[in-house]
Length: 353
Image (cartoon, rainbow, N blue to C red; front, side):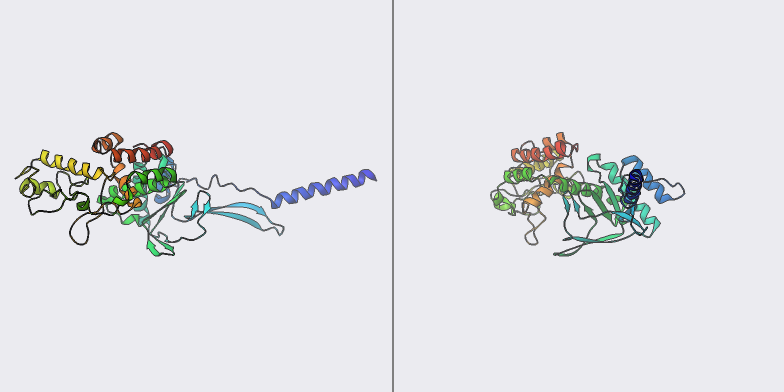
């Protein structure tokens, strides 16, 4: 009798474990982010090629898939859905303080255009900047306490979204790719608050948002038109061989500043003046300036540390390290700020410059 009761108990225990196993499951998302090939579907095949080459899964829907979790006590299947959450950050989410409304692509040709832009973006970037997953949508609006804002790109800790990339003209692709890449880098750089505090302290905060003519009251702008207070006219990369400044100075010359060659300028004269402007701007640790003022036609220093970081990263990532250091070799504060960002980008993010 004793053995009989023992057998019954063992049987009940075994069936109980089996039942428990049926309502307890494990979730595995390992294969959800794998893109399978389908040669008969041009969009799916392109997604597969991108995934195979760069290891980045690209989606047109925020729901990646579902995984069976368990069968409940009623015999119903329970699934766990995996989605692309743009609010996901390293230690959780932002609790919905910012939400996104995205419109999905319906047009096959537009999907292909978006995929081709994505391929160019990944080809230009280094693996350290690749997202965990990339989401392509026709349009996207960000909703927050500050209002509604249309977004072309949303970069988060894990995921990256491109909106309206099918509209980008071929001649604009390179510019957009650089812009988006810089945004990804900026997002990652901002995680290093201690280093950025050091970066921000290199330039005295009193110099932000000033007119350049206030900093260089004794400088004049050499030009052929009329006398003007100095501001860094030919500083940006756009002032190249076909720039309006170079053409004007070679055609009309300088008649306003006796410290510089009068009359028509040669290419060498223009290059010397550009280097001169760069040195004056760099003396304060800046590498660029704000847009023209609405009145007076002058330019300002970056208005705050955020603007300074934006313009610095843009300039920094235009050139290989050796070329940047050569361009700003006469500006110790610029080189100091460069070293701070370089230690983040190169040593901590693993991005080569």
